[in-house]
Length: 118
Image (tube, rainbow, N blue to C red; front, side, top):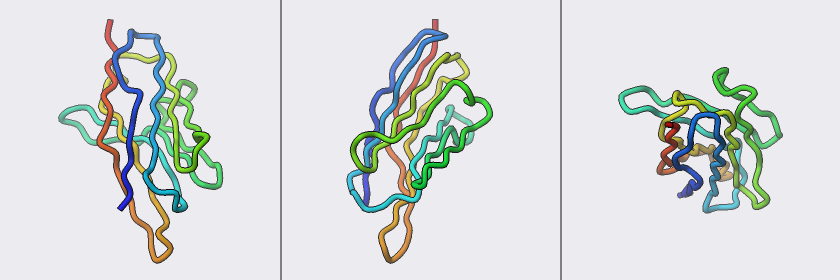
């Protein structure tokens, strides 16, 4: 079992920035690590994904504003969020697909709240 621990959420004014970080509890290889977000009462949606080979995917609504990157430690990923708007308010979840050698498994973090409000 792998645990994903997120940090960095909080409150910020519109136009501000936040950086989220996620660390996996294991150093087994990952297929990808990324971020989803969910507003209460709505479906969880993809924000950004970083594949082990370096390819990045972004949701259209964050392109040019958010940047996903690897951390310095293995199996860590960060999400730098710029030009935040109230519509970015959500719980952000780290998500990872890990390679256990005998198969793959997907994991979720516990979520970190991001509030964008004046």
